[in-house]
Image 1 (cartoon, helix red, strand yellow):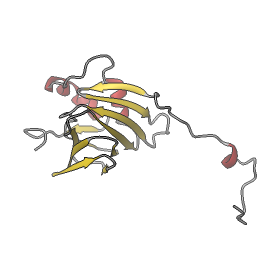
Image 2: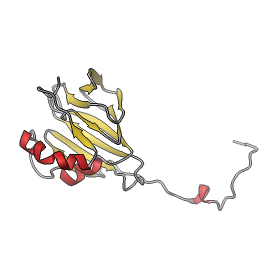
Image 3: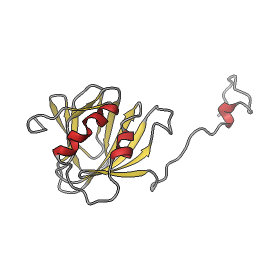
Image 4: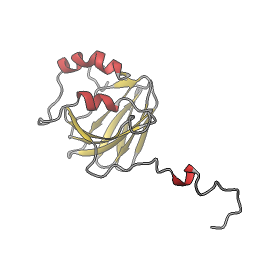
Length: 173
């Protein structure tokens, strides 16, 4: 391409600084929460707080508890399977290739409504909630639902990560 524009000198950091990074397929920190297995691929520590990214495998008929993030937007990309999402008082079904955006302060949740484990990519901006998974996710057990007692123990910890649980009488009401 032959553009006739003023360009920075070839020694300028815009040309020379290699500030990006790569996370390989098998990279990241794996944590289990109930019937969810998440690999935290990118943390706020790596992006100066700009965003975080997680790759999740969710067992059939499982997902998370309705909640809000008080400071972060969250987005989801369905890599495989079929999920049902709560978005405020709406329910949305989403399948492979669908993208869901949830702004901060919006009650939301997801559940794998398929018959096979399904893959969900999760993005936070700014970063923050991924540190909950790293610090409090489990590392070495077979997936099983977290009982109410576990969630009750985590209320203050979740709050410190800007997460507020908002379950209904039947969680998905």
